[in-house]
Length: 153
Image (cartoon, rainbow, N blue to C red; front, side):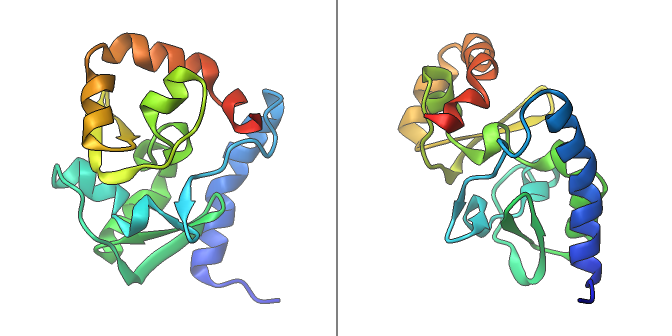
């Protein structure tokens, strides 16, 4: 079986994360929410940070990482992501930050997003995002305490 550059890079990037999770007793618990196997509904994770908005990714620039396909608007963004995927991937496996703060998981939409302290958070909808934004620090603390145990529920 031959490895493509993308597959090799994804495996290499995921290995330290898997080892860290295993050392914390969370082996195989982290996965990314995807719609038909596509993370963030095909939006470019890096663009949230560089352009300040969701940007549609291209099938010409993708990588498989943590059980999902990640699309990017450019090869540069793909390479930036692969240098440190955890820096650009949404928190809580791409599930709704509000839902995780409440102890469950829910899908997300690329348009309901916010970067807080250099981390990307997604929500189910803009209406839910406004609810989450009423007390971001408490909601993040609650979600951090619930994650990744909510995946078992």
